[in-house]
Length: 171
Image 1 (cartoon, rainbow, N blue to C red):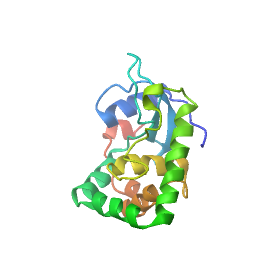
Image 2 (cartoon, rainbow, N blue to C red):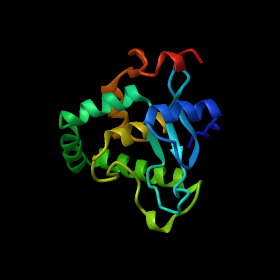
Image 3 (cartoon, one colour):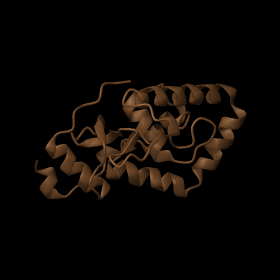
Image 4 (cartoon, rainbow, N blue to C red):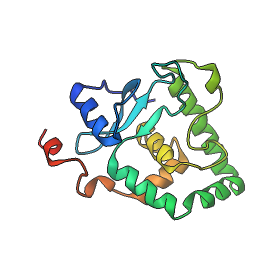
């Protein structure tokens, strides 16, 4: 796992604007967009109210979220799930990604209710491209093969005009 960056007060304000709510239980910034803003945040596995929260890596960049949503609308996930079922090498890689995700999250707390549960359908299904891309960006290339495929498909999403307000862009 790459080391998480601490969340500054300005990061927290940007994240709130990105996700449309106050972020909860932030562990850190897992990946920054080339523009410098948080693009993937890490969330502790237990929320302040005690609820378990399996999504350790959370895609916050609005441009990346939009690109993943576009791909999901195309039905890509069913094809990727079928590919996992028929490609033993890809399935082994996704199993390793699942294990890496669990290990990363467990550094911030072991939550018995989440034992063996990661995000996005790992390891045997693909049900959320946002989760796959978040893990791939946070962990780096070669860790999550489905996430790497999603990263290739979304391309350089940060080259599109930033969707943050001009007020935030001035920071």
